[in-house]
Amino acid sequence: MRKILIVALLAIVAGLSSAQTADQATAAIDNKVLATIEDSLANRFVALRKAAGEKRLVRIKDRSDLRQRICTAASGQSTSKSWGTSSGIREVYYETDNPEGLDSRFQEMAESRPPPKQAVTDLTPTQERFAVAVWPSKAQGKYWVGVGTYWSAWAEWFDLHLTDDASYSKGWDKIVASECKQVK
Picture (cartoon, rainbow, N blue to C red):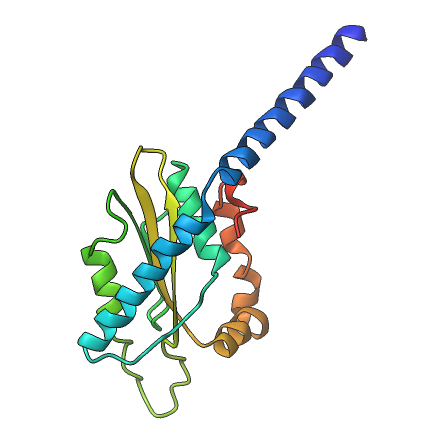
């Protein structure tokens, strides 16, 4: 019985120390530096859209679910390099040593135009907003960048709460790394 208690206690201590390590890793991130890079990329996104003659999109300043997926990619866990639907909601993720430089995937997202409406009765929302997230990579001097385009807040809320997509609204939680679930 004594051996079982000792083994259980050691397992608990090991679990707590790994949780603290994950918390310390995310706490060591300089959020001001990341915010500066994100602001620079957002300004570039706006400029690229304007130069391409595309509709202006409103920036979502803090899209925590995008940041969590970028953190997951940076942690080395498997994640898709892009996600999207035919209706225009898309996200692209990439790793770079120059996060403020112009990447072809970033440029393509900025200059993309939403798909045309199929018919007058087509109620599919169009792109209204965008978000940018940056997270340090495990590789020294590299960063993961994510950029996404989204529907209006109302259309997204409606889709996630009042349609059959509601059952999938928390689906992203399953692919977020445990150390990234608290990232805001």
